Image (cartoon, rainbow, N blue to C red; front, side):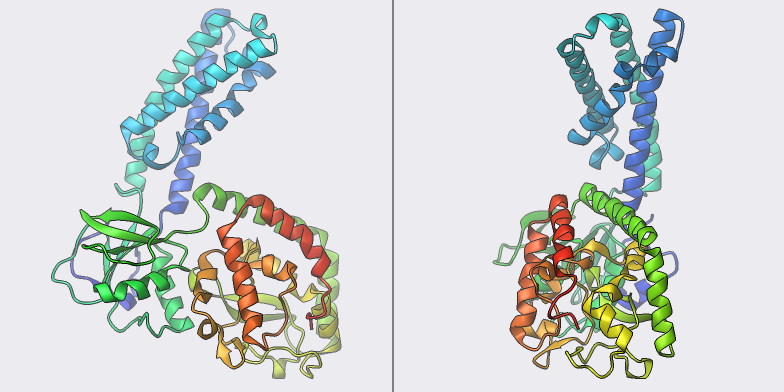
Length: 463
């Protein structure tokens, strides 16, 4: 990827430009996997060479449980030592140093386990020593080649950077893509559509750096809190703001004001679980899904699914899928009017599937698409209100809840905060639970929320 330094472009120009830059997190993830695969290949080949030289047979000795244990031991060592991530992808020195250290750690643990389980006599010490030595040599060669490949794929930079110019500046700085905000986005009076447009460029980078006047830093810190991207504000002098840390860009100090709630490893773990859980649920509930679809179709004319714009991760809009529970001519695509207990728009089938939460099952498709997760803050319609106020007008922390993917279920739902938002407190209860979920995310917390969801599928506020 080439990031040219020059005059800042407008938001519209960047969004419309063909072949614009993309975030590199997926590319980095693929390079991590490929580097780990080459490391494992080096281990296997190194041990095969040692077996052939010592015993005359390259592969039969590798088939034993003892030798097979080397691979998972190395994977654990590499993950713990970050031997396949970060600078190990682009730095020759870091790649070789971390790789050799991971092999040495694996060798030490392997030998310890042999003695601990009294298996040392069954394994040739010469094979083990020579095998790990050959593996180190091959690993260094493979890693040097992989770094060259990674540098080419990444365009020479580990991260893609977007520099937002809020105001006029004489020159651009650094190698990041410069974008002039102009009148495209007013952080003081931003609407959901404005956030969606801003998300269109922020979702395409790994790091956002904002240039603005000192008096604009706080409002930009507020905007960036919920964008699920590493974000910083250039600050030549030290002033008070809601910063997480101090960073630097192009030799100038910055405030780190936002980070995504999950690191790469946790994002991969959460996504893998989402795909596995959604796939299993679709297969398991396939007969029920077809039965509900048939019932919806037979009772009233119109599509089986109801689609509505919801606010998702990074405050970007997406189409959510639900089984249609209202008559087509009375459906509220904008979400202006919340459903009430005796809502005349709801069909008989619709009333049943809403009361049992079965209308939410098609959101498993949103999980597969990547718009949603199994667990996360529930996505809201763009025009949802509490006491005639839009949600972000009730509490300006509202945008922060979108720092991760929305979920089919969440902490707020298992605590009973669901249904219409007649009072402002109905919204703030959910918001506080969502922010607590983001602050304390852990994989096992997601599992606990899924288990607790079974108790609230039928709820007094589900109508």
